[in-house]
Image 1 (tube, rainbow, N blue to C red):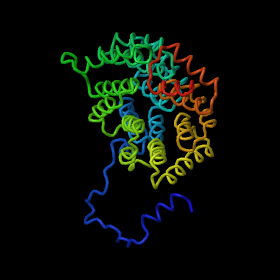
Image 2: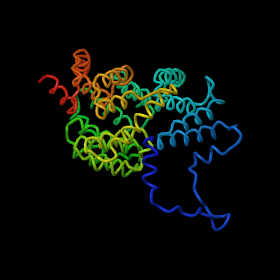
Image 3: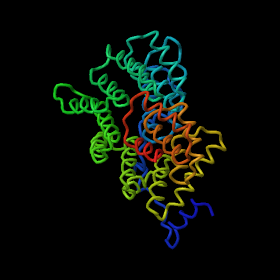
Image 4: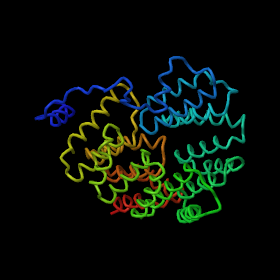
Length: 377
């Protein structure tokens, strides 16, 4: 019997079936659709570019909030009629955001570069390009893009952009000091989005420093601004996993087990704590990987590597996935999974690749140092 039906049967066994619910009137509201879902009810395509851009923005936000890539497809379809070489920058920026979210990095980069050739003062495009370069480990060009954004974006955005690069290139303490001053400043005003970005950076810096209790404080400050942010919820869970607080991970993500990234962390926490659902969550995640491969959908190699390393304990296979991920993404989380899988599979070449990257950029990172020390014992 498949794991899903085992769980389903255990939930309904021995219980009486309730009578179907009948609304008391035709006016009774049974469910409320989000603005993005309401927009999808429209039968005809958008004819106005401004309206199409606004709808696409809602759909992208919905995709991020739900981690549902279908909304990205709807957003692309909404924008497609307005994609011309000379159309508004907002349309190109949204398309680049979609492409980056889908890990189509080369497409996003080309689109942003074309836009900046036409509009060199488009600060948001520089900011997106800086983020793309940072994600792929091109820190010098990322820093330059942050500086270019200074001509048209608020000082706070530029400070946040540059601090993220400093933290990755040997200036960890300086970045923390800058961001702490910014957090305490009464002279510079920040939007909620900027303040969320600020506390997210402070969280990631604290993790780099090995200060997990401080990291939890900062991530909870960010969650006060965006309590349903998947990125922040998973960042909090990863800190709990580092602390061995597996029960907290399970309690926080239990209602999200329909999401791949949550299910991965549930499977890790359950295995470590010998939770009764450990095998069910492991099998459920494996089934999703299998279905993605069968339907030729792209698999996020970093998460797959974590599953192979931490749940099924297949270090060689984890290293293969981690190396595939390293070809396109070089954030700290990518470095950590590469180091961990290389250390456990005793692969000297991959360890050397990771160490060279660390030395080249003078990276300070406590979780990476753990695997460095383990590999050299």
